[in-house]
Amino acid sequence: MIHLRGVSKQFDGKRKVTALERIDLSIARSEMVSIIGPSGSGKSTLLNLIGGLDRPSQGEIEIDGETLSTLDDDGLTRVRRDKIGFIFQFFNLLPTLSSLENVSLPLHLRGWPRKKIEARARELLDLVQLKGRLEHLPDELSGGERQRVAIARALSVFPPILLADEPTGNLDTATGAEILRLIHDLHDRLRATVLIVTHDAAISESCSRTILLRDGRIVEDVRR
Image 1 (cartoon, rainbow, N blue to C red):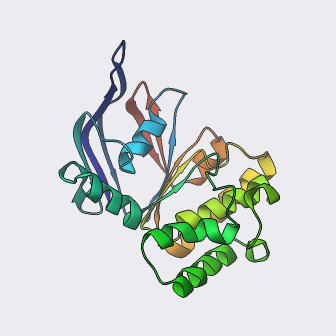
Image 2 (image 1 turned 60 degrees about the vertical axis):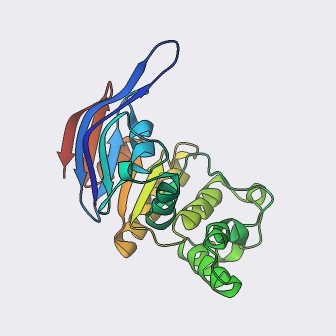
């Protein structure tokens, strides 16, 4: 499902910084994998490269049979749109749109008919247990509810890959545990491949596989 071969990433500035160095990694379909490591170890950079949000300096990344380096910007956009759902720490919901409208937005961009969009958005908000919050704006929701809306939006096209960057990092402990249970439940139901960047030991230990990064390299790969 996901294959990285000799992937490195450097950022140029006054001083060149190597964020990732010679990463070789394969992740099978339906795996649930946590990516851990100290700040600055390259975790978010790795997730951004896998998600096609950035391009590697060297090496190849293959997502569901497509080599990202062979794609132009429109091709990368298509892969992100059709194959990858993103969940971020700070939700990234549009403040003037309701829960239903936030979840509907990616489907409007795909040109779906309005009735089909509304049916799918309602289905997803029901799936994340927000059936009674359809018309609420983000600032009328709790942190946990906002993250549920963000998860529903990420799942709008039932993507085969779900990438989560510190999905519980902005939540209290109890709400974070609730969101983790939800992600596990959705993984079990949808059989998506899930990658979670986290500093939370509970999240890491709940995954079937944990990858430890340090100084831009994989130093440990543990399967449970």
